[in-house]
Image (cartoon, rainbow, N blue to C red):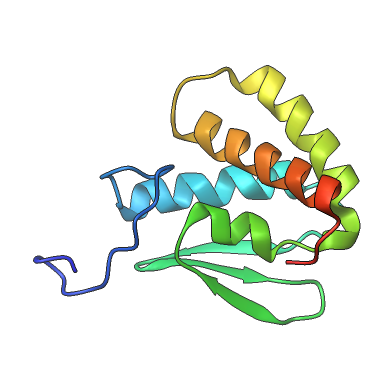
Length: 119
């Protein structure tokens, strides 16, 4: 729990100790940019305590970690998402918050394709 604001802070290796709204906005922008070409791309919004992922059908998922965001994306477009993530990973580099967001998304998408499991 955060001593300053009283909200629960969920451990997130991607975010590290920087659970700021600015970093949450950066994560939302990164995931949105990757998903721009994916059919039925969701809308991701940064919140004070996490993110909301709104699907094309209007259902909303509240996500507390970056991994939760990637898991909230539609399974049916995993192969298109993987390709978009691979392209973004090449241009992003390997340092910084955006790079960690893309790397985690790529890892989780590959697992999803190999296992074939729904969220």
